[in-house]
Amino acid sequence: MTTTFRRTRRQAVRLLAIASALWLAACDSLPTPSPNGPRLNAGDPVQVALLVPAGSGQAGDEALAQSLENAARLAMAELQGVEIDLRVYRTAGDAQTAATVAAEAVSDGAKILLGPVYAASANAAGAAVASRGVNVLSFSNNTGIAGGNVFVLGHTFENTASRLTSYAVGQGKSNIMIAYGNDTAERQGRDAIANAIGVYGGSLAGETSFELSQNGVVQAVSEVTDTAKASGANAIFYTSGTAGALPILTQLVSENGIDPTETQFIGLQRWDIPPSAPDLPGLQGGWFALPSPSLTRQFEARYEAAYGEPPHPIAGLAFDGIAAIGALVSAGNAGSLSAAALTQPTGFVGVNGIFRFRPDGTNERGLAIATIIDKQVTVIDPAPRSFAGAGL
Image (cartoon, rainbow, N blue to C red; front, top):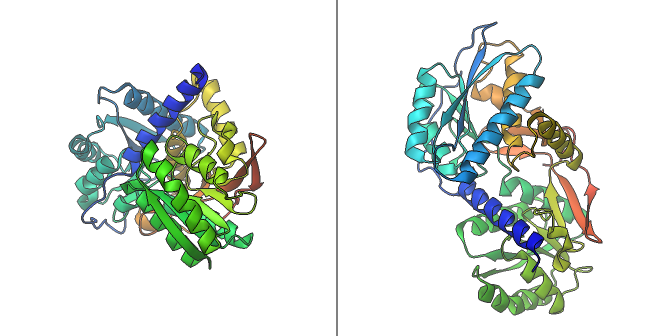
């Protein structure tokens, strides 16, 4: 194993850990927000509280916190006619601390909270300020914490499953089998795929689960292949990512008699991270979803020009949050940051493409469909540029 591969593998594992923490923890009860939101005074700077995981003592949290703040300030610099007073609060990646600083931020005059990162912290922050009519745009991707005054900015399993399933059914790959790891996040991924299959007119050919260990994955290969053959599945939807079971599972399933040129492999997670992932033999020809690559490259270039280093993979969410806030405030309405305003059907445009919030606190994002050909990522269905007919 080369040094480069080990390094990128470690990076992928760190990203998976962050993604898991973004997702884990759901709220037991959803607070009811004020329908009107905080009132804004025309012409005054809009105070926004950015809640970041700094102070946890973890180097990864410190780097993520700085990258989120950098991206937010980059977005502020690109706003026209809107002045934002950004104040940064450190949550230490801890739910109780997040609740405390969220309440403090509103007492300081914050009209909306951007962040926190981790699901439990976002849930706690939302509960702490719900009675004060302030909304929270969390960086989490856990739809379990969405609702009330908490909106999630992160890329959700539900959104990705819908985009990929809709495309697969349209391409005639409608008899879909699901292979998922036996943990909380992958089970939620399985549920998102099964729901999307029903919504878009596909058929659930079958499903298999496996323990998330090397031995568990190897033992599952025969069950995956037997189920695919017996059911006549023409697609297998994998919930695992490149830092987990995906590389070995896809390769062994192919070697065990499932031809991926006939039975389409589909991935719920990104197959282009880390940069070495497209080299993996089991991923060749597979489909996965991602934000518009051209928009992502533009953001990364602007960020690196401003700060001298690449952004964290989820830093763009902070940019998107500021872009949405700026677009709403520019309308000049006193209730610009209410739940009704945040959930406008036309949505917003950020560095990850188009997105909009649903009344239930979840989001829809315009995603591209990509495949891997000769170890290169190729977009086969571009991300939509508006929600009219986007099929999300």
